[in-house]
Image (cartoon, rainbow, N blue to C red; front, side, top):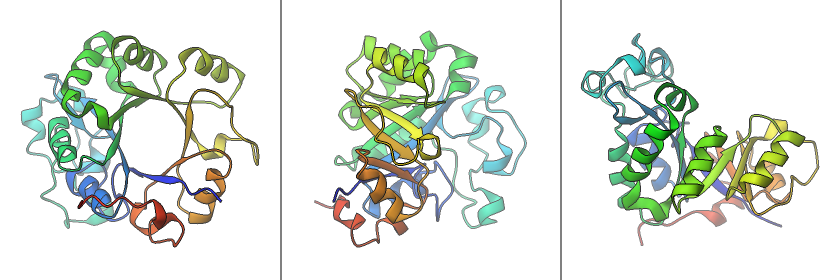
Length: 252
């Protein structure tokens, strides 16, 4: 029986605000070998780790990311007040470089860095991608650049040696043709888009599915040739007797 590697989706978001340093660090402490996080860009071209460009859900404050400088964001806390009230009111929106420094302390960790489509649409691939690759350069061997944006992944493959992952909007014939041309290292898809009980497309890539919260389902997908399973509840999943076999000991 195959056992998947688990990917901490936006960190350990079961217990901490998503995409924060505390969520990412506690995912690693719980034994995650892989963490995934989202990257957007501020009005003054500073990379930050956040999913939404509208700030209200994650911060409780109204505002649009692309209209704010990083200095303005420093006074806003990413504490997800609807989920956690004031428990994490000191957690700020991380700069990407803060996460880079965190990952330097966990050299066994693998990071799936998702550059969001909104940022690419707002600022342009030719402006965003060179700067992103440069900022991640010191942890390149730990990083895989992922995106829904086909052209962004094409850029990474053409201009760098980073691992790449293309996130599929659809699991269909057209996407298969595009994937066969792109040849990313990973293909990533919502598990609900896969046909039931079929082995996903073979190719030069590895597969990752999201969003899985049941250990048995994670093991099911591993045995359909899908080695990576992304989850919001990494700590609970890693308590399963079989899944804990793929825990990482970051203390060594």
